Image 1 (cartoon, helix red, strand yellow):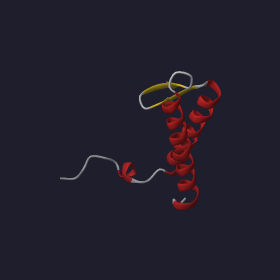
Image 2 (image 1 turned 90 degrees about the vertical axis):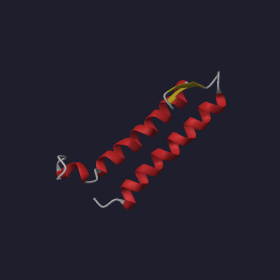
Image 3 (image 1 turned 135 degrees about the horizontal axis):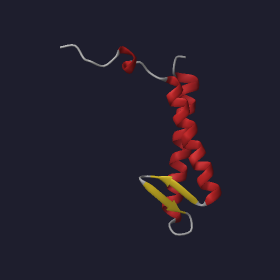
Image 4 (image 1 turned 45 degrees about the vertical axis):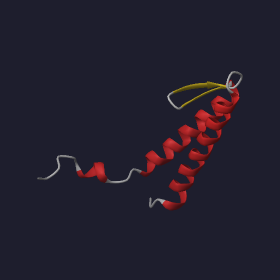
Length: 77
């Protein structure tokens, strides 16, 4: 039985990788300035829970940088 999904759904979307990486970096920068970071299904406040805040901040920065690097150097455009 043939699938009903269009062929374009199975193709990679390089712009999506770039946009998601940029979104992660923007969220990390905004969180760094405001002291409240969004991630893991909620928010983490720098004053109330600094460990969770900084772990989420580092993960968002690293994931954003990795996705941008992956888009720029690994994906075929």
